[in-house]
Length: 533
Image 1: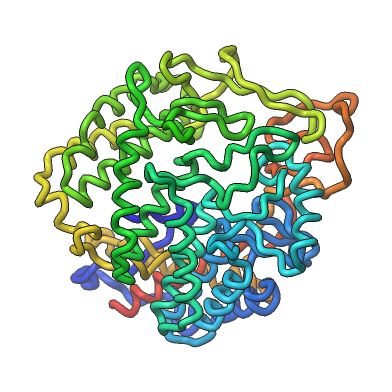
Image 2: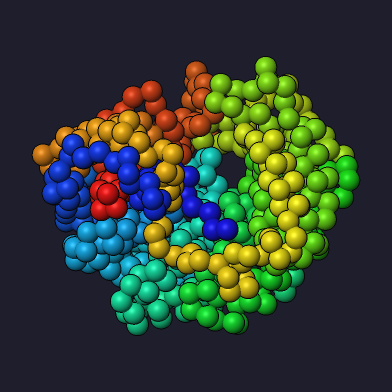
């Protein structure tokens, strides 16, 4: 049931048993692969890391670096693909090679996360090793001026579940503890568990951030971070983490809270004519707004995610209540799908927000040029809006029909909740097994060719060069009170004072943690395939 990050592209794992008969001799020698992995890892650990942690990308000379926003040299990031994910790939490499280089790198990543753990047990997006005053300055400068990223415009001083920040750290530290039983990693995991349990509301949901910071956030806007949150898989990831704790550590104290959270998903579903789910809710379970461009609404993509969760929960418990009215929610989604000739080129076939109780499509607009003079607002003037999400409705319905046809005994044969599931922990990054029908001479040769390219692509310094098309304007102070003359809003970013990230057609060469993780996962998969052969 645990989901894994989708920013890894093309990772492959060891072939299934019995599939090795079609194997051909690899064209890249094993030692060349291992040497490439060592060189790349040494560069990341000795040249790039900050006290064992990482952000997302760096200019080649390390003069600028970015997580979701531009970071300072003393900072590391907890959002993917940041420090926890780097730690996970180090552990994958350690398992594939047995070399202590990788375990030590994972250990340093774990220690970096422990150093930045909030006293309550969770994590913020950012750890700043230059101290609290430095972090506050960052929020007052770069963070405050990211017009589109309102979550960074105010320093809360607490921890967040947003973008999996806390749970990814906890998941990695749990795996790190399981490697060698180091007590300090278990102590950190115990704090994470306490944070997840302490922050849970009696009804079963979680806020986006905890502990509560106040009634208002930056610019006097109401603080939405205390709402019951489904956005960015907050509830789903917390439930998955508690299942992991139950299975790996046998801590029965998490069973009731996770079941309570699962049952809340039933209660959060809204009535007709919008029988779906919102992204966040008030304490009385009514859809609530969040950032200024996120109105109180029912969302098709959020509803599809909730449907998949309820199907998961039936497979965990065998209780029919999780399937009740799921078909109705799928029908509602299907009725909103755009005709194919209105899809975007990249397959987006759904609008985002619909008014609860009426089903009217809500449009979001913005005006201005930066965080000082700009604003977002919503209304029902939908002329010119574009679809934003892709949902495979046929696949969702097919899964529902398959799960619906299972008896409770059939559904729960692999239930982690009932103690029947296989390990949920390692391996983490390598997720896509290669079936026997795919392991043939052509496929094996193609993978070998790809490995040869990866070996050749590592430059003399020891990293895989990446064109950094995503960038941001350097901080230059608070923006003007009026848009500059001739300003044209591109959508992603405003004027030169807006520090929000944006994507350009081309960019400078740099270093990417995501690319390192992706390429290492391919090399690790290759080693596993050759070992099996």
